[in-house]
Amino acid sequence: MAEFTKLKAKSGSILKLAKKSSTGVVHIDYRDIDSLQRLLTPNGKVQGRKRTGLSAREQRLAAQAIKRARYMALLPYTSATL
Image (cartoon, rainbow, N blue to C red):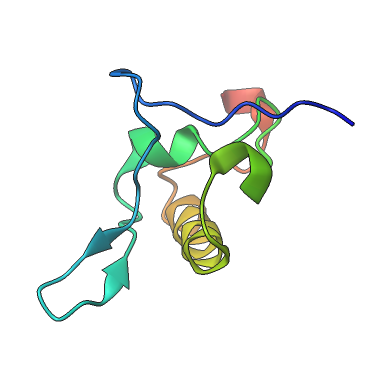
């Protein structure tokens, strides 16, 4: 079986995208382009949970944030512009 390496932040810790509000609601900001680009493959596809290290709910929120960023033209749809 293939080995999967988790995404790491520049400081060496695992990348944290999800932020909790004071009421406990989990939110991933679609305007945080640098963090969202780390979840994309070089071809522009969203990477899987094994690679990103996100929970199922966080992965769904991240996918929705990437779709919103693409719609707002903050992220490219294809790798031609990466």
